[in-house]
Length: 415
Figure 1 (cartoon, rainbow, N blue to C red):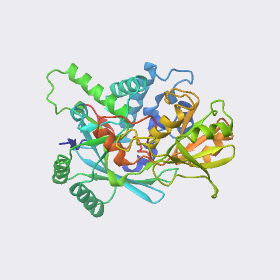
Figure 2: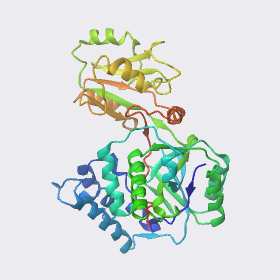
Figure 3: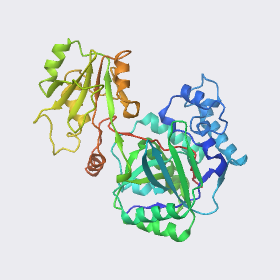
Figure 4: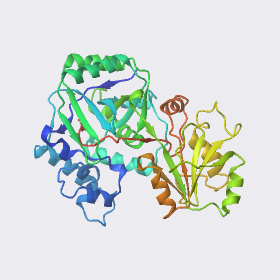
């Protein structure tokens, strides 16, 4: 039984939503963020990446950055750019990118559900990234970025959401510079909110689609608050964290492709010969780049030419939820044995390119700082859930979700 509840969001007034909304903090570096906030005094990046308002030489983990984040967050309220709703609400959040729509429900999930594995994970977290967001949440005394959750489709939840969308006007409706339409409805009816919360109690598990570091950090801060308040009841806001929950059929995972700096000291013919031990290698004679059309097929770009790779039978275990992933097959049968790369998270010879950039970006990288590229077939949501259900973790850089959930539209105060 999953807990997903309404809350009193701090959010932009209707006319300020587009001015505040920003991409999540972890999709750009500090220099890119400094460029993005020029001429945008209310951009939420002033909160999520507050170093943009400090000297460029500052360490992004300096306490001054977290203090500035809290100052900027308070300023949004004190200047009337954002206001807190007077009663708990759910919020319906729809995004449309290139004609494809995804609609989720904004609410608060339980830190106990995370700790008890009702909210399931599929990735390891890094201590340094987790520590950063712990301090950010702690200093801001708020969850500033939503966790991206998914769940197996529930008709009752979908029916309530669709009915509200059809019978009520949105509070926000704007298109960002990258062409993504963002629309938000406030569910301010106590009776409907109670029905939604009750419907979620029929959900066995929630799954983290994206935001493992933010989620782990929010839970850690919640436990810190519990330690500081030993008489807590469990109803305090610090026992919950901000999330957007989407049914699985609303989401699409994009490919997450690989580029490499060399071919491990081999000539092209030597490399293809080694690759042929585990893959059928065919020249691709079609137009443009080769985009894999089914599981266990891969594209390879080497010396101005595309190839189609097909994993040979017996080179992976179809019954292993992790081992059957294409990212695992490529790692286990090519990247580790041929390139000698054991940990793709830290090795500087490999980089990753999200599918949103297109396969042309793989060619561009091979013409600049890389030598060889592999295009991937996207991981499925079914695989993600199967791995989480098995208590396993995915290899690094297995999933790429688009569009990204904007930050700043909903803020969850911890008190």
